[in-house]
Image (tube, rainbow, N blue to C red; front, side):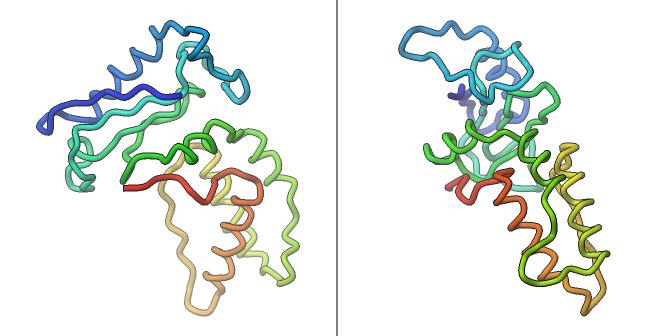
Length: 175
């Protein structure tokens, strides 16, 4: 399911991800290593869906390219590499391979805001804008709302929608 490039502690771990991608491109499957074709995505360049690189250092935002575990989902050519705080669990990798982002975003686009509590129009707009940013590949977003405007309710509805559509799952990484 994944290739891992391990480096010494003083090596730039984000750059080592290119070597892991090369391993995925050149991978020769055997009967014991065939991967399911489901959710493989649109990029046939790679033969193993996930690439990781690590130098054993804990992730520090100040030294982002030189620390942590770097990961890239190779199933789509527009997926960007990013650092992780820890390794995926086996269950987390299984969930990741099952995830169909296009299907999840199509479901989100057609899901009404019926949660047993009402959301104001600006809260719905904030949720839709966040979902669109996630769909376009944005990994960091800031949702700024004034005091008393329902930030907690907005975030609960957003998280519920993302989990229900299976855009993300509840267990990913452990340190």
